[in-house]
Amino acid sequence: GAYTGVCSQSHVPSYKNNIDKLKAKGIDSVICVAVNDPYVLNGWAEKLQAKDAIEFYGDLDGSFHKSLDLEIDLSAALLGRRSHRWSAFVDDGKIKAFNVEKAPSDFKVSGAEVILDQI
Image (cartoon, rainbow, N blue to C red; front, side, top):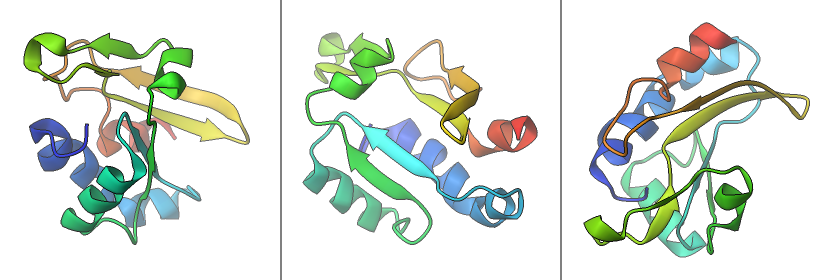
């Protein structure tokens, strides 16, 4: 999630810091989608200095994540309905790898290092 600790300190930076390795393996685009409006995502991308490496898209109402069965209710943490942290390797519209963290604080399977090994 935009501006959240794990996403800001680990998840997005893992892709930003590995963009050259991803491109060397033939990856055309690295895309970040979060349950936020596009203005929040744009501000977050600027703060992370990641706009040149990663495309950021807001899932305003969470419908994209809900369609992938990735919606999670984090109201107890004052965040409302959000998305599980995840990553995917998609090749020509086909999902080749799909990784979903088990807990909101986890960062074990969704980082760039994992995807690099899956490509």
